[in-house]
Length: 285
Ligand code: C2E
Ligand code: MG
Ligand code: MG
Ligand code: MG
View 1: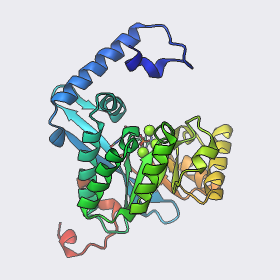
View 2: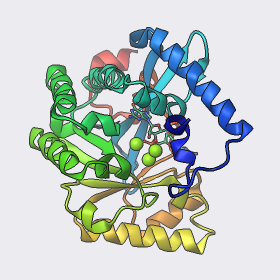
View 3: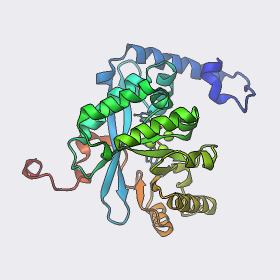
């Protein structure tokens, strides 16, 4: 119970056990069983969402987002199966498969288009786990400079010294390190400052109704200023409307990702986001 519902505890005080908890435990158990029996190599796929420079409209990179179609459960969203995979000790395996697929896809893109890939806390929790990531990157032949690895505050601050060592290792290889869901965590800025980050991603909760909500507007404004003061790149997530985009432009936002441009799509549908510099083979299709 503590294991499955730990996120539902409130500052150490467990909440009452409700029917909802029971439903969640049952669901997580079903997901775990299906994951354990899954043929992950075929059931897992990767979708891609463009990260676009506002001023030129050009695609700078794609974020890889995991998709799982289970023969038993159907489509299960990553927010449901990633946490279960973490607890079931399956996340290294998932990460390896997804990263391999994403890098194989990225190797087909022009080499000025980057790939952004989400890592879990476990993926940076030991030198063995990091070696697996490094090995997968090196085996792909993709220039590590094209790769950003996205981590959340929770993942980075769980074991600060270890996370710092892992991040330094990945940066030595040439990868960028992006802090995902920025603004939603509780960590101290001084700690984050001590990590060699290259980019922050402003969480989409601050972007919805940016044009109408003065609080959101101020928060995004100060997060943009903070990233710029710290010399970091900044991607704004979850831009859905032209009004939100206009508000962001006014604030000096440069890189955006969101349904306004595109939802995450399969690798086969990326053509329209890629620069037309790949020669006759492509034009014939
Ligand atoms: P994230 O890394 O913050 O990814 C962004 C999420 O926001 C994605 O959800 C994306 O589909 C969604 N999104 C993008 N633009 C918009 C928008 O304009 N409006 C709205 N409402 N949503 C938007 P998704 O694909 O369901 O992924 C959820 C989370 O699951 C990710 O959040 C990430 O934390 C995790 N995840 C996904 N793929 C992987 C993976 O391969 N490995 C790991 N460790 N975690 C992953
Ligand atoms: Mg992400
Ligand atoms: Mg995010
Ligand atoms: Mg997230």
